[in-house]
Image (cartoon, rainbow, N blue to C red; front, side, top):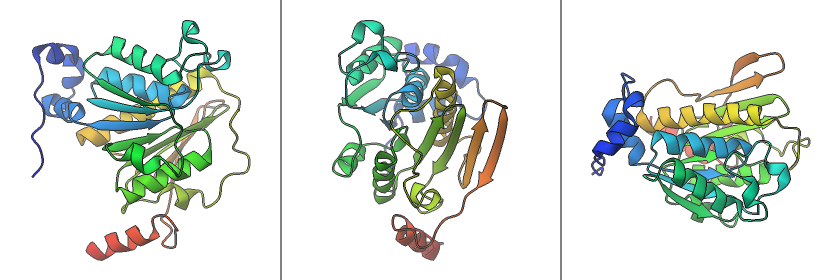
Length: 259
């Protein structure tokens, strides 16, 4: 039996009043957000924006995974990092900022980057995962954890003035390994980035999370949204499941059998 949704306090109703005016969202949608736990893999320019808007929206619990300390080069885009926090752990800066924004949100931090060794452990309590890691070895590890634990995965990424977004539902949609059978050779740890670009795709990913948790709107399932902000061209491309995918192929066949 599914646990009942948590009630909202009067202060929470006042805080979230304007978004609860959204007709298909309402108080039930807000209670669904409050009941949810979201894992965000990396809280840099993209993931930090996701975390900020999910905290503002009232997601009940955020799990933030990111290793390392704040560096000067982070500050052009990582909105949860501040100048006075240089040389200190990123996750501590993020927790401090998010709890000042919304003390009703439980912020749990993990000072590790996602890997094959820790992905299952870090993801185990999450209802949904947001993957905003810069390296594909981390993305592939998070994808395997999501498929293994049958948890939705929001994939968001950017490079220069390009960005992309898709929603993965294990057993129903292509997984990341279907989209990228191999690690893209041009993808690297450091790359050109404006904060406005990473913030834009992070905000769009947060909307996708809210829609999925609340059960509203149309999701980017089976579609990859590609954006070129130099030209302001937006394209939605269909993506196909690979029945021989080494990560999700078996789960896809099992899902098809049930259907």
